[in-house]
Length: 339
Image (tube, rainbow, N blue to C red):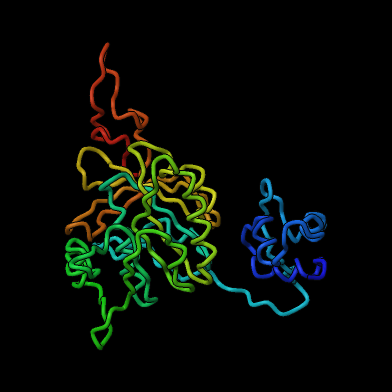
């Protein structure tokens, strides 16, 4: 066999672009036998290709084949200026008005909205409301809350069906032929592989191993990369009183809009919503807080209003009374009052 050439190696590596490959794998693919001149010379070829950024050294005898990219020309040809994505936020059931902050948040194609919520504090209510308000855009649903495997077949969960049936009083879930206006996918893992491009993708919720919370960054990155001109709304679990969902900064890195959901007082149906972050907005809203209640078996958002820290207890829920403390009567021990 003739001695291996740099061109031979380049042609081989085209098949492995974006993947890792070992030196032994390259020798095997090129049918290089031990004791031949090519067996040793391929090392020098690999060194040259690494300098040319065709390969990237990973570890001993292990390399990453670089996927070539071309510069993207910004000016010099006509570019379409896309408007903000027409996403409708959940509405107050009684007033029919969108959540008060919605008009100040700019959502773009490819954006990711995260809902970091304490357990049983309305993440699914928000996700279902987003679905209903945007049903004309045929949203895609997936996650832990919506499907289960019954006798070898995936079916909607009973709770999901119950919510849908209740909301049929004001949402048309089907078209004139009785077909779903949304797409329900039985996906609980590998979400990026199942994202439907150019659509609203709602995931309720992503479960990450407690010892690998840093993985959420890669999951969210993969989701964003596959959205095309769509958007994603992702529910994540959050600890009581925590400033971020599980995954912390790794979640913040890829979120374009960050919303936190906590309890408001002792009534489990009262919710405190905080705007944690928004990359693009028309008014300063980050840090603002809102309150509302959930009625109708987790289907209705009512009495949505902006809140402020209580001026008597300063959000601590308790006030000093002599040498002791007592529950703050001004805010009913919630830490907040209507603004």
